[in-house]
Amino acid sequence: MKTITLLFAMVFFSIAGAFAQIEKPVTWSYAAKKVSKTEAILYLKATIDSKWHIYSQNIKDGGPVKTTFNFSPSKDFSVVGKTIEPKAITKYESTFKMNVSYFENAVVFQQKIKLNKASTAVKGKVEFMVCNDRQCLPPEEVEFSIPVK
Image (cartoon, rainbow, N blue to C red; front, side, top):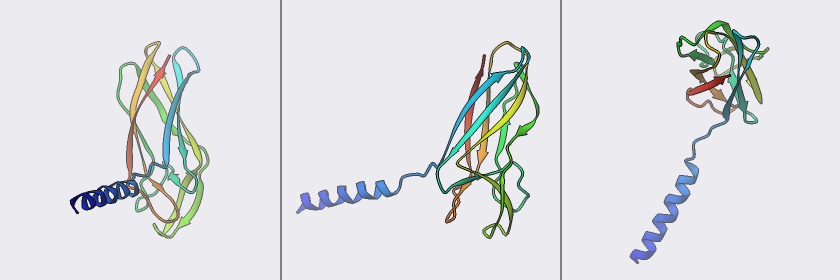
C-alpha cells in the first residue's frame, strides 16, 4: 500500500511541476556596430512569441509598464541621446482603459554611444512587460552586456 501511495505522489508532483512552468514569451539579443572610431550603434532586439506583445518606451502613466533601458555608467563610453524605437502599433486596450503603443513578433531598439576607448562592453538592464489578449505577466528586468570591438 505504501508503494502505491508513494508512486501516486511522485506522478502527481511531476504532473503538477509540468503545469507550473514559467512562461518566457520574450527573448533578447544584442549587437553593436561601430560607425566611426568614436561612435557605435547598439542594437537591442526583442523576439516576441506569437500572440504576445511588449510595450513602447512611450507609454503614459496609468498604463502598462513601458520598456526602459538603463545603461550602466562607464568611463569607456557615453550614451548619446535617447534609445530609438520603430513605429509602434497603437490601439485602445480595455484592460488599461487607454490607447497604448506596443510591438509584436520582433522589435529592434537602437542606442548611439560615444566611445572613449577602442573596445568596451556596454552593460545595463532592460525592463519590460509582456501581455497577450488574456493576461499580462509581471514586469521583468533582464541584464545585458554588449561587446563593442
